[in-house]
Length: 264
Length: 299
Ligand SMILES: Nc1ncnc2c1ncn2[C@@H]1O[C@H](COP(=O)(O)OP(=O)(O)O)[C@@H](O)[C@H]1O
Ligand SMILES: [Mg+2]
Image (cartoon, rainbow over all chains, first blue to last red; front, side, top):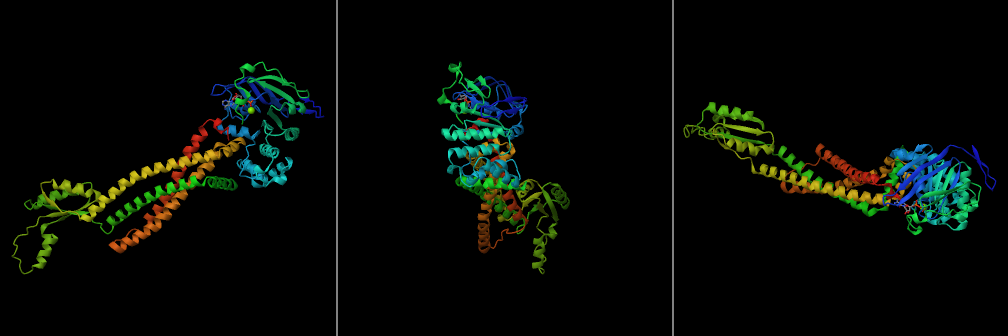
């Protein structure tokens, strides 16, 4: 056990057993793009980790590896000790019940209300109706959307849509939350609000990994920062220190300029 | 379990409401296929019914050469009996021939008019199947003991030909329509899958199993099949009742209007609809689940 310090006064205990581990992982997409090269990463239970770096450098690819949207071409990806590359289709389904995922573009169902969007994510897992009702209300309260529960996503602001997306990711109590550019479409004030929400979720014990290129926010959060460029992990700053962007020695090797990256 | 089924059924109908045109096309296509299949089936059923009941004479007469002896005729009769496709055969000695009996009855006082019975011995043959009659007759005409066979009434032969033609074209039309239905259902489900890729993505993301993800799409195919069958039966039933009335009124010829054949027919149409819908959607869903996950990325 060891402690992670924070300027805002949280001293938190995290387990030394990694919940997420990348062992020399490479990803080569079928179109020939080497999105990730020889990446090693260990994330412990209860940690809050930023994955930062310019666009198109492999941040999303790491998250996709974790929820098995893509498979490593080399190396091993372990989530809670399981090699996700070896999972069957049902195994992948089980893995995903342990992970909540949040997206830049929210991916809400716009013909369903706020409440129905959450209900849907529980119904597909065959949750009994009484439990669904209780859990949905609890989460709506937690993300501050209880009075918007009968509105449709189009009636919500960007920040509210992202809070709904976060609520959906958390609905089935996953111990790990992955967020891919959660504030990419939001203004700075709203971004701050979302980051504080993610922080509050982390404080309740959920391991959180956030891919972002919002350096200003990352700077203010004083959390662990993993810096990526050219498909490699080039820096790992422990929590509590101010984040200084690293030099990117692989810039020429980076396969695509920021504009060409395939965003979510 | 019930709440789950209810959820999937609701999802299925929500999905269909979101692309009503395709849902309509799929339903109509299955309905058209089953409608044509239904008409073919009804014609075949009625021809069988007619030939089996009102015209249940799968019989014909074989007349021997007048010169052969009674013994030779009897041996030939035994040969007829031994034929596989012959159901029954009855030997009619010439003195028992209905014509001779009738002649004697009509001319009781002129016994000497014909001092000798000019008729040959004959055999009444009952074939196992209407369709065997022609071949049986042709075969026996080759025998040297046989002088002639009496033709079956024209109507029966015409019905047999008609029934065969209907069956054959029915099979061909049926196959074409089944293929067409499958293609259209497949296409509809593909569109559904495309329209619902975000739902599938979310279901997969929160940890639903592939079977769970596939279920609403299979249900959707089955619903199209059932709706199609319903429409086909709904159009077919009054049409048939009307046709049956007209035919009976104009030709004095009863059509099959109730009984187990009709009940079976209705069941077959419903089951065929479900099977068509199921197969059509299974093909698309399996194809979709096997495609690389990257296709789901832009959900
Ligand atoms: N499904 C894919 N197929 C092919 N190339 C991809 C795919 N996804 C991402 N890439 C490429 O891999 C590189 C890394 O992408 P990504 O992990 O999305 O970067 P980031 O999230 O850091 O912007 C980019 O060059 C991108 O174009
Ligand atoms: Mg990205």
